[in-house]
Length: 180
Image 1 (cartoon, rainbow, N blue to C red):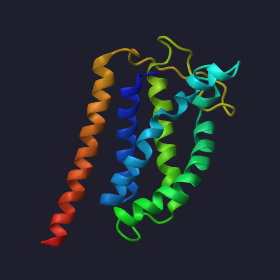
Image 2 (tube, rainbow, N blue to C red):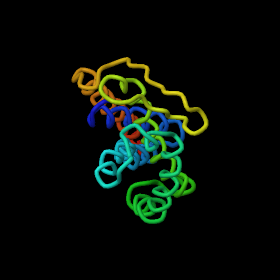
Image 3 (cartoon, one colour):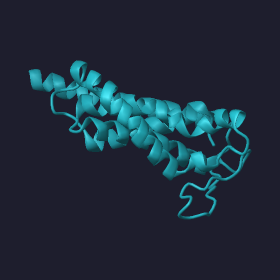
Image 4 (cartoon, rainbow, N blue to C red):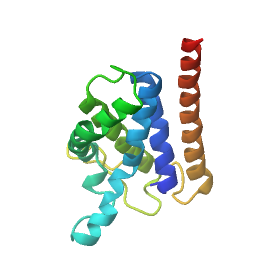
């Protein structure tokens, strides 16, 4: 479990790669912007555990199943209201295809990036996670780095920003070449 800045960095890395592979230019950047906040989604269990007994950190909320269900629910809302707004202001016509799939994909990639980051560091100060629950009830804790390691957390964040900046530069270069 990396800290907040590390989770956002991991989300930026994953979203930039997925956005780059699935979309072009501004649509890829929009995908990153839409999904980045959801790289913190599984940590909602920290808030839920205060309101409901029995909810533990790294429990069911830190699974691919939860992230998938949440992505469909949240993506439906974003696809209905946020993506059309993005499309009307920033995205080229027909750049993203289906608004709902675009939103669901952004939320899902951001959420799964969080689960992966926690797999890399969970055993240090928290329970290992079971990301494939209920299909596979085995803990996954690779323990590659320590939760509070500022080099890792800031490295992920700065790496994610740099990777996104490269995508932004690439999109801007493509636009400049098209108008020349």
